[in-house]
Length: 316
Image (cartoon, rainbow, N blue to C red):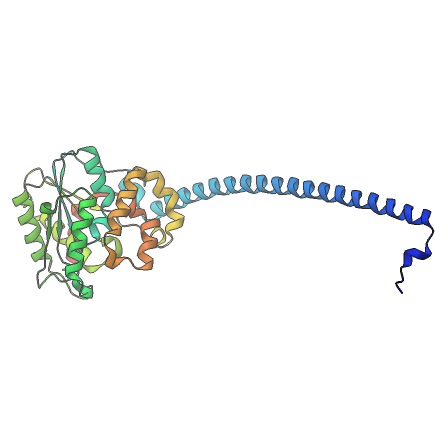
């Protein structure tokens, strides 16, 4: 025997309960819809305020970067020597440029903005690369040689304009001291043979303080001091950034973008050139390609002969 509670209720009461249930369902559905609209309205307002705060934060962040940069420059005495951190050295309009590097990948990792800017300014400008070692520190010298050719091709440099040395006294090794006199002789020989009008290389800090990079600077500086460079040949060096800007590259990004000398298209070319050095693309170098200021800007400066003389005495 089936038992139902409704069988004991009057028919009129059942009809009222059914009507009440229908009305309640309608109210609940209507309430859900209003609640959903309320949530959506709050969500839109939240997103709008969040975007507004984000824009304000980015503006403050950028201004803070610029202010901090100026303060650092002033504290280091750069203000007086360079008349402000945004002073640029005009690259002379020349037809033959020699870029002196220590290892395969230096041309892409550090000097790509300069190379691309020279080519963009004058397509007839001939850029030569003198790489003083084949990067055989990890026993990948042959592989890195091919990578150098490929990278230079991306940078529109002919393979015939690239010189890669493999001298026993100039091996890729941060623990091996490169003789300044030997480097100076090699560089001078190439300057004279190629009729170079402008030499570009590292400054005394070598960007990364790599001893091989620094040795090149002192070699080129010695040529300037001894006044043996051909008449009209100028020398510019790539400015190394301070530790803060070097290791907190995200913080430095707005300044780098403001000072960038590359178009967005050329930035992609610089990144593509660096990607040709596949044997060197460890995880931290992939981050370097994305965030490093040296992939989008080169600050070039003239050599201060008085300062160089003191540096040479200290390093002799």
